[in-house]
Amino acid sequence: GDSVTQMEGPVTLSEEAFLTINCTYTATGYPSLFWYVQYPGEGLQLLLKATKADDKGSNKGFEATYRKETTSFHLEKGSVQVSDSAVYFCALVDSNYQLIWGAGTKLIIKP
Amino acid sequence: EAGVVQSPRYKIIEKKQPVAFWCNPISGHNTLYWYLQNLGQGPELLIRYENEEAVDDSQLPKDRFSAERLKGVDSTLKIQPAELGDSAVYLCASSLRRGGRSETQYFGPGTRLLVL
Picture 1: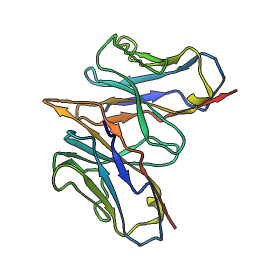
Picture 2: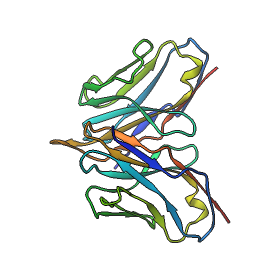
Picture 3: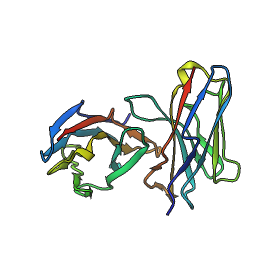
Picture 4: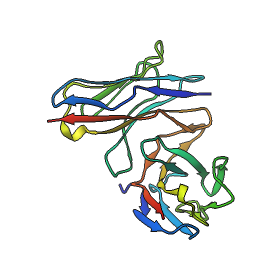
């Protein structure tokens, strides 16, 4: 079945550092891809999405590009802030309209 | 536009007691989901509704869990009786499904359940 693999955390960075969180997927067809963020004690918020190959999703300085050739959707941000500390989940929608989730990556930003 | 609303935000109960969670989806969204999320893990789907019909409840432990969405809008998830292992966050999400395509799921803040 479809699956999502993302890099293990925690990822610890200093403020203003460059961020990359890797995400790769296995799927039949070309599913929509998502990044969700979960701040401590809160629900999941959609961060960005891409619905077809070469699409770039972006929001709040974060970007991710749908790469069909490498089956990847890596999350990047040029300069992270302490407020970006959260757990980030990569996900895809499968052919049964279910979200298939990665395990989540905890991001810790130190001032 | 109001987001997905859930209540209560927190609930503490003793084992073997019943508990219910309520969810009001984003206005106009015809698809509603209930998820369970354990600490440090991703969400696990419990049940999905298309309007008032439960179209996927294969992961719902039907011996103690039940759900309803009577008018195709808000929904209730119930556990009776609760067990210690049910302690988790229960998330509700909604989306608008048009034709053969399911759009983005939007999540509520969740209900954090602690069973003592």
